[in-house]
Image 1 (tube, rainbow, N blue to C red):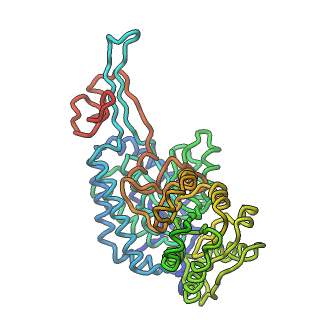
Image 2: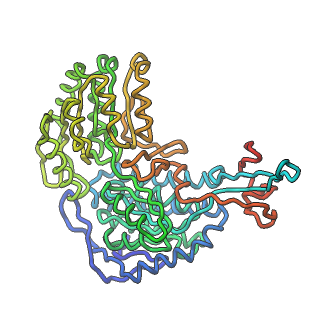
Image 3: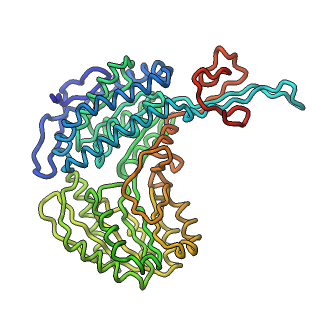
Length: 521
């Protein structure tokens, strides 16, 4: 597939005006062609204006039409899956199986949101009929549902070149509800992004979508990204990345004359707690499972288990098995040089922390690689230093041992998390009520007898959590509940039936589920 190295401004391509950046193969350090040009200020403005112009048209398209558009995007991406696998492997160092699996997940997300549109519950249609004879005051006719908020900016993630990128969950959920999307491509995988963006544009044209329903811009987050977030026509932001980056976007959005929501997934160490009985029975197998979860994808998942809490006096077999696993583990290539450097710095800081012991740390075989490392400390050390709660993005984890009371204090002390996992027998769980209550307040997803890596894309999934795991713990970036992020509720009072949206008309022409006078129909 021919790559041009320029932005997508509606249905047009940007100019080669520079400055330029290039993808770098993290395994070979080869600079990949083509170089990618940053858009001009005029091109950024044009993308926003096109999105704003497309919004009143796109928001009023029937849900079935938008569902067809999402399915068309999935079909177009499916047809270029081989190109995605080849370019994605070169840009990220990820194995082909991972790229193809992530492509499948992206297709599934798009089709899941299309099914959501077909079903109709997501719109949350509510009808309260008038009661003119009610005393002491009559009741008016009120009807409400969710409506799209406007053009959305989506920042692609470095660690998921597809599922959290150009046509990933943020874009799919925004497009599903009727919001045009402007994607800010990630510099780590610009070629993969170009292939996917071409597929989205082709689907938009085949489906007769208004120009501006989708654009994708290259360039830096500091310049291009910031200008998009500041633009008065942008109404929301989706972001997956570092706490520093997400916090910067939150501050920019809050400082606007009209503040807008930023839905940022940022930082999580995903604590894992192992109870005494299960540890006594299955220490070796639990250590193997933990090692597999820790090192999956070179630890570059937002759900990587970065903190493990063990009851003091029960940890010896688990730690010995884990040390053996790490001793034989090879280093592997990380996604880019910046992530690798951050990993080296964060693990070095933990290793140098007073009271922390390095269980095992292997040498890296080549530049740009990371080796798994696990640290150990006692509860007193952890509770005395907030620095030990910092994320080490990669295959690194900190084990903390302590009494039941100390482990409860640690669970209470940690910040908001995407996940919290607890392993136990029936007897363990019977005595774990306080711990479970704490974890429910701290995490968006509670996992029993399972490790956190792996996120099912479905209606019930919550991939979010209290700050700083996300900017808004009431939301999720995975699953159909993500659609609500880019909507707002609107009510119609005493509105003639002819002027109501089809979703709220008395005859229910769309046949969708609705809450009528407090009862679901």
